[in-house]
Image 1 (tube, one colour):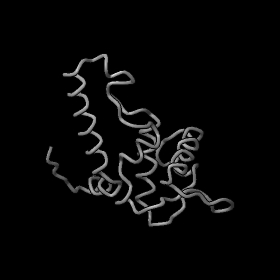
Image 2 (cartoon, one colour):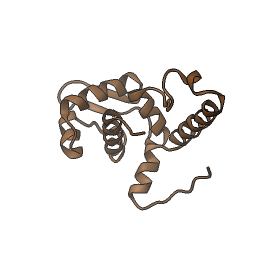
Image 3 (cartoon, one colour):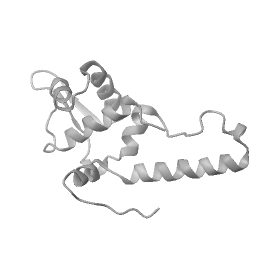
Length: 137
């Protein structure tokens, strides 16, 4: 299982925005250049994140995007669901797996979603600065 490129780009863009002071406006061109992301794809992703109420936009000169909440209140799960939808490792028709495999993958879905929801953009920044975290699984 891999993250989609869109999900990766969304995570990278929001982490970059979280590194800035609160309410600092980020422009697409600036984020694209600093993170090495394609500007057209980034623009589409930021619109999706705005619809998911993770970003606000400001129009006009000096316009751009900023986070709607502090980095500690935006989970990686919020971001990934906004861009790619829910984490479903067994696809559309889990009944075909049989009860044993279906139960195992159901457990996996719960664990992954819980983990992603427990990690915030603030946790990402803490790890960047050398902070470590311990997780009980």
